[in-house]
Image (cartoon, rainbow, N blue to C red; front, side, top):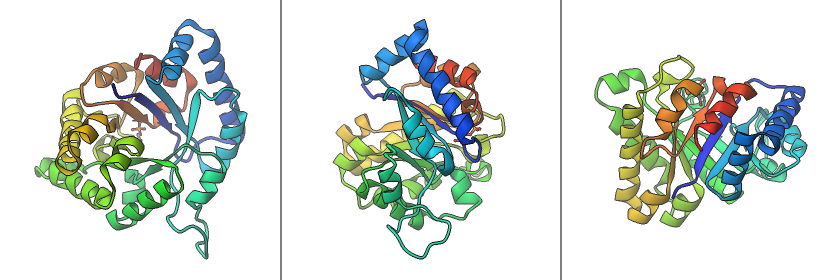
Length: 264
Ligand code: PGA
């Protein structure tokens, strides 16, 4: 059985104070309320992971304000070079030092606002793995690409350029894929759970073609794009959706908790 992942991507939100309070409220819930305790058991039994991705400035605070190890911390991005004259960038060894477990790579905002290409993202993926930080690698099509019937082509290109040099073991054990259709991010338009599942199924078939059955069975594929407490259970009930990457609704403990609960 694939371990479910519920991951909150805070984007450019969240001060240190906000982060401390968020973690303290979430940990209190995980330790004291009935559903929270069930979630804690699922985490201990390796059935579920709860991840938050605060901005760089709050990462240190997030890592060290946790009292239990139940919440995992992810960075939202990093640069592939280990060090050097790259003003404004953060390297993977820097994240490793902070004990970040995961890093989001290739989020559509990185691809479309900051112009990150498949080539750069491949380098980032490799650099993350070299630093033992597990990538949550995002892929997804634009609305125009979906409407012109090119969704599969876009996903295949994004993935084949990312993992062509990786081995099946690495992909199966270390890489998480997030399918995030660009038109569903922050727009309130969620893909129907059926469409989301179809896209995740297609991604799994690409993993099958490249790496074989064992890898395609074990790779975790998340859905992201306007996930809310109202639609999370339906999305998670689908065969190929192993978790959720959540933006807006991960910024309030109350809605994030409801989404986590729906993974039980
Ligand atoms: P959203 O963002 O949930 O606010 O649509 C999802 C994401 O960007 O990962």
